[in-house]
Image (tube, rainbow, N blue to C red):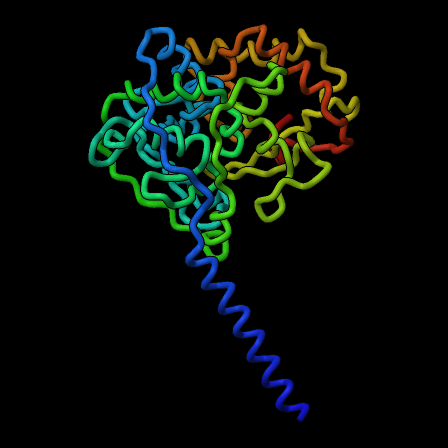
Length: 321
């Protein structure tokens, strides 16, 4: 009798596991059809879109060709939007590629509609209906205002075609199935009332400056830094940017905060120095040096309001001070 119960129990467990696996295999991400929408083609909209692409959202950081010999990995303009495959040393769960998003019809997104582009940016759904890996920060971009996302697409539509076939992202189990739960529709989005919060959200400050465990931000450690990044044989750890006085930016004045970004403007304009172990960083100092004083002050003001967390971080382990 006991043996029969054990066999039945084992069979039930196997059936449940098999059923759950089948459910995940067949599940479709939560999505809506792409909108039939026109984007503005005015010089003002395209300029705003370029600013979002190259500065605020730093789309270049993932989708463009970079000069890996110089500080800040400056963009190679002829390779803007051509796509990039992330190196294994970053520790991502599989082979992850930011695809070609130029207007090339065969290897880029030239054949995509405006609605399909907007859906991918804010909702995490590719043209073929599959869920995008959330390394593409669509969960933050879901809060990008309608005006800004239209401007962003208006600029993307102007990117010259670059013929560069990129490999499709291939994620490991179970991430390849669990990402189906990440996308969510995002329609009719106004800009946040708090300008600083909006800028911090679209710039994705929290994601890099929060320790992740199994890809999930650690509760209570938001903006407290400590997340390691390895690339090109170097390692850097994100800084604590909470207003904690001893381990964060609590003692940093508004003027000092602004100047911290401004000091990299000369590298952005005149050219960056060679990349070394002592200056390696994935913080986008070069594009962020172009943020306006007003924007930097708004970001500073918002960060002053987040919860202070006492968390000492060695941002560049082993490097010269």
